[in-house]
Length: 501
Image (tube, rainbow, N blue to C red; front, side):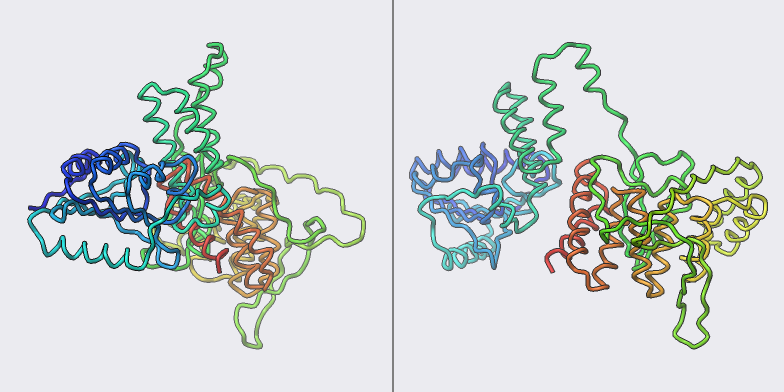
């Protein structure tokens, strides 16, 4: 007999465990569910033989977690998998006649949030015996622990094998919600506090929860608990296929398409507000050199090939490090161009052509807009983006620089210029312009990622690690508020790998 469950999995596990009369063998990665724990304690007190293998990590060995020492006191054999071969199994054998297996960990996260499955198998002894053999093999190379020595939070993060920080924080948070539903307000508050300790980005959630549970004036409550409408996620592309999202896209904005197997993608979509990352907690901008960065006029040589016919392109704006000379006076901000309906209409037509992959037509529309309104920074930037798609990096750099000349506060233009320089091997110039983009948009993890990779290529590993660290922090923040943001997740994983390499 085989049955598959996708809902109410906790109920199924508890029901089968309650039928145990001889032995229970459990191998699961994470175990935080108190209800299942209580059934095991009950069965252990009834002299049912129980063996349990868990992952050796903070989720299973924290002070606030399940009291596994109580199970040991009842005769349960508890094993922790070794770190070179961490357990990721999820199965349970009951009386050598029933098998529970699937994706489901014995946690609140699996029960309340994750999409999971559980298969119940009976009367299929070959399959059950195969799992029993695996369990025997696992215990043959492990030793049962006499007692559980809990991890401090610092030790837990060091031993964070599967990236559990967010998982465990959310698991404790869900446990707190369950305690709240049961009327256990104090327990719920303590769990909320523990969730915020595990992951600092839960602190805001904790504060909101406390507001609901403490007595404040109705006026203060109404002011403090107002929340904004959920913000639509918008994909942003970079040269390495990883991006951020914009919290305030215009209604008419479109997202540039994703080519399935494309390894190098566009840094910006053609909309002026499209590439700004969520503006939550600002982090300190990591300046690349001690001296401040100034905008100067300079001729930069862009090498598009390796032949003697290499040409240099005059770029009016680039980034230089300040010297010991007195700092130049801050430039007067460039006034915004007067709105020109005809030029704006041409830009919109160019954007449509770009979305349809009609790149030459897009360039023509943008060029016509420039002919009408010569200081349209957006039109110059859009041409630079099209040139990126066409692989014409020298022209991309030229148009991005002209966009900067007309709007030196446009972070997207600096990033686009840097991407072109990066592609042409002018890594130092690219780093400088990524830095300028970050000065204008400090929380943009796409720009941080781009600069970190460029620093790594220059052999400046220590500076790169600092940027990768901030990428991890920012992406954690975005993923916490936008769990479905795949770009942030990909960037987070890539940055973690870079830090570990």
